[in-house]
Picture 1 (tube, rainbow, N blue to C red):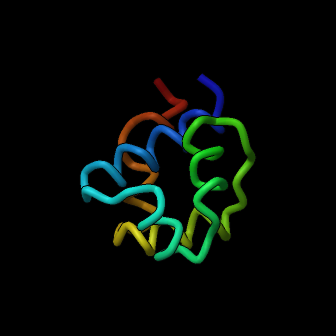
Picture 2 (cartoon, rainbow, N blue to C red; picture 1 turned 45 degrees about the vertical axis):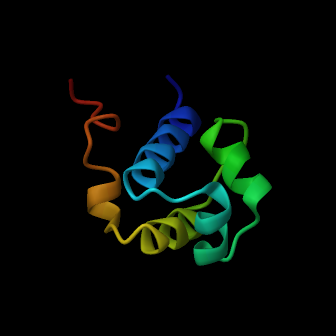
Picture 3 (cartoon, one colour; picture 1 turned 90 degrees about the vertical axis):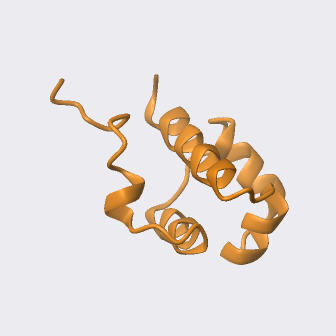
Length: 75
């Protein structure tokens, strides 16, 4: 799985755990809903600035965002 898909999957997982819609997340992160959808589907690149905005909106640290094992390349 490529990095864009891994990040999109992680955003969706965290959003679903918080019972947030894409619209809710987009509003909280000051991003467009269609952008959130494209990122979640692995169709768009995302900047670290926008990852940080999304992490803040989801109330997780960047460490927690990246700590689920999807991003562990040492395995």
